[in-house]
Length: 152
Image (tube, rainbow, N blue to C red; front, side, top):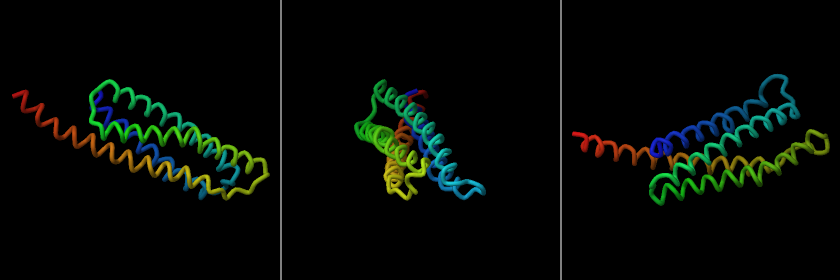
């Protein structure tokens, strides 16, 4: 399970970020009839659920790392990913929630740079997840022929 988890979990996590952060979020505001308050409400719901799913993936990934031997570089990348995720969920999201509360209450008109921090965190996650996937797939490809040769 651990070797496949090092490929499957980052792939799912990467797909989640691409699907929600890069595709759904920007397109949502181009849909007919979507107002800023409605878009913010939808975004808050979608990103809240996405962050919970990311946390579950991160916990399973961490568990798989602890359960099996993995090289130090992969472990460092995975821990960096988890650190970025925790920062995104514990620091950036609450600030964004305060900001959207103000916009939804009509106190603020929006236009905050806080979203750029969230986008930057997702950018770091994308780069790290691609790196983790490349490392895991390369290791899997190199190990599979050796295992197959041992079976002969």
